[in-house]
Structures are given as structure tokens and as C-alpha cells.
Length: 544
Ligand code: VG1
Ligand code: CO
Image (tube, rainbow, N blue to C red; front, side):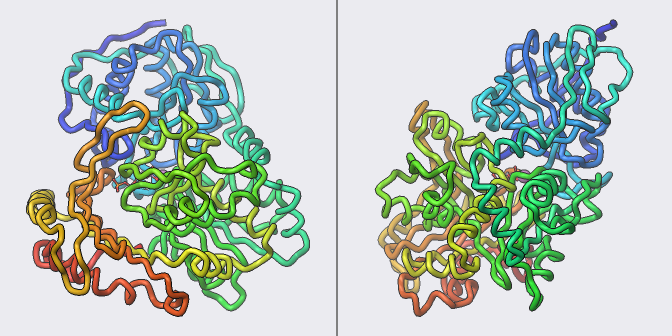
């Protein structure tokens, strides 16, 4: 078979962000754009010769063309084995599991996660290493370096591979295994959670679930696990078929974009548990009847109840959260006498902690939670964790959350996003804020006294690597915090995220509305940053 070496020149801006490369579909479809990045990736990992790789997609537009290009390029680099999901499909956590299970050298996931799809939507490439987790900062930097000096890429001349059913195909020197994308993942879940007990609760007819797959990747996973293996009613999984444009929706499981689920959960006849996942299946949103569980609370509650779940019964080594995530998890860790690590935003920073056994559970405020069962956040896993807790405690979701607050106090928490802000304006605002914030220590602002103001940097406790400029933090003496950060996953302009948190111990105040409870801190954040004047906006684009 013919391997072509095609001349190329670098594209600017193929710089990995929070989750490797994410751009508009129109950018990815430019001639040589995808090929350059994939070749740079192979160059950065010392080539593909003899390697085993997992390749999967979240079902979005341009996946099918892209996966065929990647298969031909992998073959041209001498990759020995490729594990590909049927029809190219694999959720991000399922891909992570396959990498680990088959001791692969890594994996390529074609997804822009929660970003919209379709011809005018977004596309992305995630790259995971042999531990199954997102490429480290060092590997990402090496890929970026290679994108800047690329002169040619290699690709095999071959017809498209039929990915529609499980098969084994040989392409030149590469063996391609097309596998059922769900089975291994569902089997893993059965080892972690008490399926008979959950099934018992569901089959007693007293417990209903609504899982919104948002026309993204988790449809087939949730169907197999909830409806087939756990006996949930037919129709439990809604929007279950992955569509290349996610049905025109925004596959981001939050109160704004998962509005169909929110509407169902607000009805008088609402199911007992509502859940949604994102484009590539690594995020989750948990709802009770007319009740929203903040992701920061969710991970804290999972940690506090982990002893009820077979896979975690023997205890947690430690926990971790991303820096902007609320400190609810810290309170659980303190009570249990286990360490709680604070990492920069992005799952890659949990990798070393998980690999070295320092932590068992971790989570982010951005609807992500996971554990050492693989190396990604995991949407369906989080739903099963909740189901397992519910099957043991037999209480409504809301009651479990309220009891948690009563026991640990409540960390009121919100995130205000300003999307598509002009990049220059956002950069200048952050620069001025940095100068300002770092001088505020000891000062009084309203009713609050500033304990510290800094630009967060993180030293990895395992490899000692240092990552700087991970968000501006303003911490107050009562534990309240305001954090400012620019997103690393957007594809147009800048997205400014403002994270606000306040701790209230008094149970009499736990019923307050979040935005009300945080009002004074929100005002401080707005005033300090001048965000409304600078962006000319009346308020945030999305509030979570
Ligand atoms: C966002 C979230 C972050 C998450 C990342 C990837 O990043 O804040 O917590 O890890 O998305 O999520 P940023 O840089 O835009 O704030 V996913 O579901 O893409 O893999
Ligand atoms: Co995602």
C-alpha cells in the first residue's frame, strides 16, 4: 500500500487549551489542518511505530471524515493496533477505560465536549496518555511545539474503513479492532456499584429516573445500563440517539441548556432522580424533584457517602478538587481526616494524584466528577454513584443534600460566565485585576476582610512541575472566595468565568436562594473587575 508524505506548513494557534485542541468545524475542515495536528501529535510522542491506540468520537459533525483520516495516518506511522468504537463512537470515559484495560499507549477522542456541533459548531481533539488521562501539560506543550515546525505529514492511501459493525480489519501493518463501545464500560460499572440493590429499588416501582442524553454520546451507555441492566422503565433515557448536531441543542448539562430535563423535573409528577450528561459523556448534572444539586456539593456528597458504595467501601485515600470548585469537599475531607488537594482547572491535573494513589475521588465545579476507576471525569458513573446512595439511604435527593448541609454547613456557590467577550478587553481586565488583587491582602471590602489575593499557581506533589497563572483568587477571612479565570475551551473570543462562594454554617439560612445569599459578593466581584462596563453587558451569559 502507498504511504504518501504530503508537504505542509504550520497553522498558527494549534495550541492545546484546557482539553487539548478545540476550534470551529470550519477551521478544522481547512485542508491539512487536522492532518498537521495529528502528525504533530505523533511526532511529539516519538512516532506511532508498534503502538496501540484507542480512537473514538462523540458523534458530532465531521467525526466520520476525521476518524477515517486519523486511521489512515495512524497506519502510515506504523501503529500496530487501533481500537475503534463501532460507528466510531466512544464516550470520553469509555475511551479512558479502554486505554487502561488494553494497556494502550494512548487515545485520540474527537470531541468538543459540551460545545455545540454541526457545520457551524465546534470540533475538537482530545489526546490521552497511557494512564488513560488527558495529556499532561508537558505532552501538550510538546505537541504545540511540533505544530509550529511541521513540514509534512504521512498518510496511507486507502479506502474508508467500514466502522458500522464489530470486526477486525487489517490495514497495511495495522490491525483495526472495531468494538462495541458500551460493553466494557458497563461491565466496569457493575464492579463498582451495587447493581442488584439499585435494580431492587427501581423494580419495586417506587423509583423513577429521567436521564437526558442530550442527543450526545451517553444515549447508548445510559440505555444499556439504566434500562437494560438496571430495569428502569422504557423511555427513562430521553434524547437517546446521538445526532451530529445534537438536535440543534447545546450538549451542556446545566440548568440553561438541559431545559427539557429541568422542565420534567419541575412537574408535580417529576421522577425521583433527573440527570444529564454532555457531548462526550464526561459531565453530569444531578437533579432531585424540583431540586438542583450544585456540582461542588455533588462531589462532596459522593465523598461523604462513599462507604455506602461497594467500589469505595474500603475508604478514600484522599480527594481533590479544581481550585475554583467550592470548598464543600474540603470539609468532608477534614471530617474524615484525609487529604484534599487543590489543583488547577482541567482533569489532567488529577492524573498524577490518581496514579500515585494519593486520591480516590475528585471533582470540578463544571459538572465533572470521577474517581480512580479511570482517568477522566465520568458522567454515567456519577449518576450510578447517586443511584447507589439513594438505593441504600432510601431518601429523596433533596433530603440527602439538606442533611449534608446540616452536618457540614453549606457552601453557597455560583459561577457567572461572560461568553464571547472581545479577547483584548478580557486580557486587559485580567491584567489590571491581577495588579489590584495582589495588593488587597488585609483590606476590608464591605463586610469582608481580605485574607489573600493571588494568581493561583500549582506545584504537582508527584512530579513537582509548576503551572502558573491558573486564575485570580480573592479569599476572605470567613472562607468566602471570588475567583476570576479565562476559559481555555472556548472557540470564539474570550469567556470570563467568575466563581463566587460563601460558607454559612447556620442551618436556618440553608434554604436561602443562592444568588440572594451571594449578592454582596457578586457586587464586590462586579465592582472590582468592572466587568459590566468593560463588556457592555447587562449581566452574565450563563449562570450555574
Ligand atoms: C472547562 C471547565 C473545566 C473542564 C473543561 C473540560 O474548562 O471549566 O473544569 O475540565 O472545561 O471539560 P474552561 O477552561 O473552559 O473553564 V469537558 O467536558 O471538555 O472535557
Ligand atoms: Co465533556
